[in-house]
Image 1 (cartoon, rainbow, N blue to C red):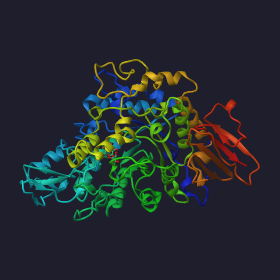
Image 2: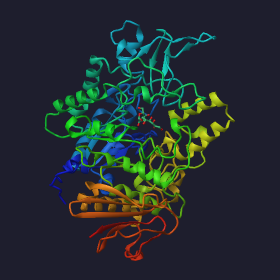
Image 3: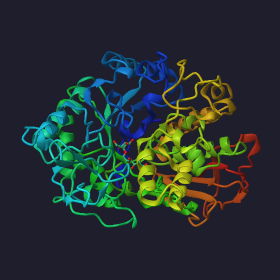
Image 4: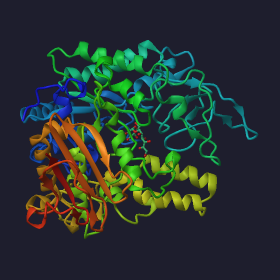
Length: 590
Ligand code: ISL
C-alpha cells in the first residue's frame, strides 16, 4: 500500500522512507561469530542478512564496531575510521554495506561523539601537556582543592552514569577531565569549533562517503554543557555525586550544534539520499522533543526518549519500584504523542542494548505465557505511530537470564555502580541488596548475551570457540532460539513477521495514524486506544494480564471489523468483549 497524501492538518503524515522503516538493531559482539574467536563480527552479520530480511526489517542499525579498547563495549572509540580488528576489516564493512543494499536493506551506524576513548590519538595528544594544541578539545578543570589525605577534590558534584565522580584526575598534568561515562570516555569540548569540525569529518563524513543511510546518534542531548559547570541538585541524598543531567542534558547550544552537524551531513551527501538520523535524547518535555525533531529545524529526524523504559526505576537508576500499567501506558504514549499535528516524527521501541528483555519487564516470562505475551508486545509495537525498531532476539521472545551472581555480569555500568554502592553503603547493606535485586530486572546485560541461533550446547550456534566473550542466556535449550522458532509456524518469530506485514498492509493508520486516544486509561489490565487516518478508526485492545479481561466496544459504531490478533483465529470469538490472558486484537470501527 502506498500512502501518498498528507492529511492537511497533520504534517507528520508526510510520507518518508525513514518513517516507514523497520529497523533491526544489531549488537555486533553478540550476533554471530564467523571465525570462532568468541566474538561476533561483521562477516557474521553478513551471513544473517537473509534472516533479517525474512523477518521483514529493511534497515539495520549496527552498534559500534569501531576500533576500541572496549571499556564500554565499543562506545569508547579510539578510531572512528577503522573497524575493530576482532570484528573484521573496513573492507568487510564496505562489503556488508554493498550486499545489504543489494538486498534492499539500508544501514545505520552508531555515532558516538559526546566522548571518544582515552586511547584516541586526539585525547592522547591532549593529555600529553597543559599547552598541547589539542588540550582544549576536551574539558579540563583544576581540582576544587585537596582533602585531608591530599586527594584532589573534583570540580563539582556531577556523577558519572557508571558511578562515582564524572571527573577523572590526570596525575601527570594535575587536572581533572570530564567523563560522563567510564574513565576511558573523555567528553569532547563541543565549544571548540575545530573539535566539532574534526568530529564531523572523521565520524560522520567518512561513513557517509562509504554509503551509510544514516546514524543512530548516541547521547545526542549531552554535547552542550551548562557554562561554569555548576553543581547539580541532590536527588540521591547519601551519595556524594548526583545525576549530572541538569548540567549536561539539553544545554544552551545543543540545537545550534545539531543544526550545524545536520548541515554538514546534507552538504556531504552527493547522491541526494535522505538520511535517517535518530538521536538518543532521553528525558524531556513535549516541547523539547519537538524542538529536536521538527522537519523545519533540520536537526534529527526522530528520537528515542526513555519515558516508557524508565517506568518502575528509581531516580539515578539505583533500583526498581512497582509500577502500574497506567504509568507504562503514559510512558509509551510519550514516545509519539508530541508529534501529533506537528512536522516532527518519532520512534517505537521497547528493547535495545541498554534495556532488559521486554517480555520479562513488561510481559510475562513464565513458560506458560512467554510466547503469548511476547506476541502481545509485538502487537503493541507494530500498531503505534513512529519508526519501528526491533532489537536482536526480541523477535524470538527472549527473556532475561535468571539468578546470576554479580560476578557474572559484564557491563561497565553494573561494575561501576555496584562498586559505588558498596563503597557508600557497605556490601551487606539493604541499598546494595536492593540494587543487586533490581539488576535481575533492568540490567543492560540481559540484552547483550550471545544470540541463540540453535538449541545446540554449549553455545547455541553463536560460536564454536572454547568460550564466547559473554555467557549465554540459558533458555536457548528451552526453545528460545532461532532454529526452533523458524520451524514452528506459531512461534514468536513468525508472529513478528506477520505483525510487520499487517503494519505494512495498513500502513496509513498503523504507521502514520494520528489522534491517539486512550480508552479506559485507568484500567490496570487493559491497554486500549484508538487512532485515526482519514476515515479509518483503529481500535486496539490489549490484555496485559493473566486473567480474562473485558473491554467495551466503541459506542456509536455499527461494526467492529476484526483485523488481527495473537490467538489462533479459530479460538477467537471476535464479537465477544472478553479477552483471554495476554490476548490482543486490532479492530476497525466502522
Ligand atoms: O543505559 C543507561 C542506563 O542503564 C543509560 O544511562 C545510558 O548510559 C545512556 O542512555 C547513554 O547510552 C548510550 O551511551 C553510553 C553507552 O554506554 C550506551 O550503551 C549507549 O546506548 C555511552 O556511550
